[in-house]
Amino acid sequence: MNNKKIPSNCPSCSKPIRIEKLNCVSCGTAVTGDFPMPVFLRLDKEDQEFLLKFVKSSGSLKEMARQLGYSYPKVRNMLDDLIKKMDALEKPDGEKSTD
Image (cartoon, rainbow, N blue to C red; front, side):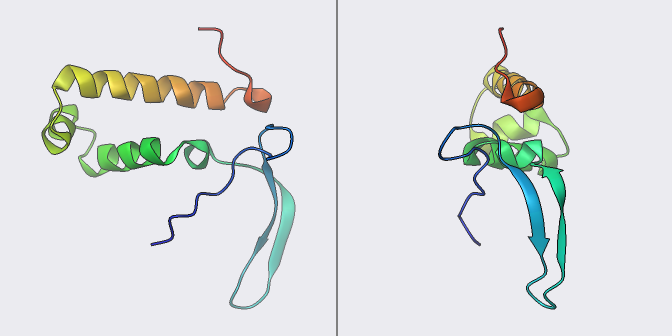
C-alpha cells in the first residue's frame, strides 16, 4: 500500500489545493476541470485511519473502543474532535473555526 499522502495544502502559501487534472495511467485519457479536494483526503493519516476503522466497525463506538483498547468516552471524544476538524475543513478557503 502506498503510504504517500496527497498534499491538501499548498506548500508555498498553505491555502487548500484544488485538483485541476486527473489522468488515466492505462490509456492516457485526461479529465480537466476545477475539483475540490474531498474532505476525507484533507484529514491527517491518523484521522483517516480512525474514520476507516469507524466505518468498518459499522459505526459502533463500543466496537471501536474494544479494537483500540480505549474507553468508550475516549473514543466518543475522538469522534467529536474528528467531526469538528471535518466541519472546519468544509468551510470555504479552509477558514478556521472560531470555536
